[in-house]
Length: 214
Image (cartoon, rainbow, N blue to C red; front, side, top):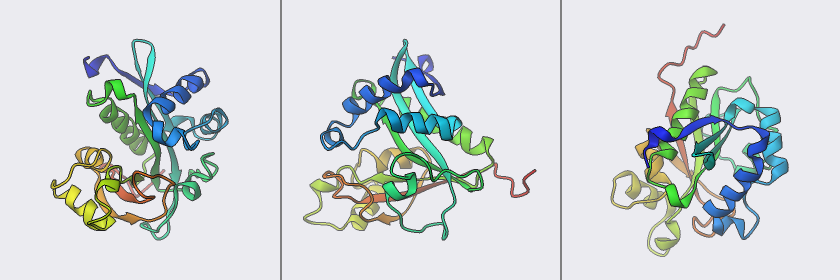
């Protein structure tokens, strides 16, 4: 598969059932506890901030998706939970007065991972960040493989080993490759057995940010 054949576009209502299926197949562990997008949430995302909702399409099939909203964290690295920052998944916390694009979720189908689809979705998010002249893009990424190391290292030590390329983590390593900087650990971020509820606070600064807005 050539990543050039993948189209990243804005999500539309007819994509909703396909995204739900994608979530079930991409996050089978979270799907078991109902911790994936539901149709009413995806509808709310489109209603509230359509420009921040993206899908990756290949041969007419949805193989990836990304959900984003604009937020204003004060202080800028304040601790938060996934439910709190996303309005319990409805994106009611979205505000055009914010300065940061927040990545609430990104997924690619297991059969097409490592094909550049996630990278194209991240580029789509960077484009949204620049379009709205936001200072940065931030997110909380689950420490996907931490469950395998929890008995011998702290979440921070684990994350720093990933940053130093001593450990590969499915999520954080991918974020770092895409230009994000690891900031700190977010405890109790999301109910998740793999990460033991820990996430990495990541940040990408918009190189084209103009502090003087129209």
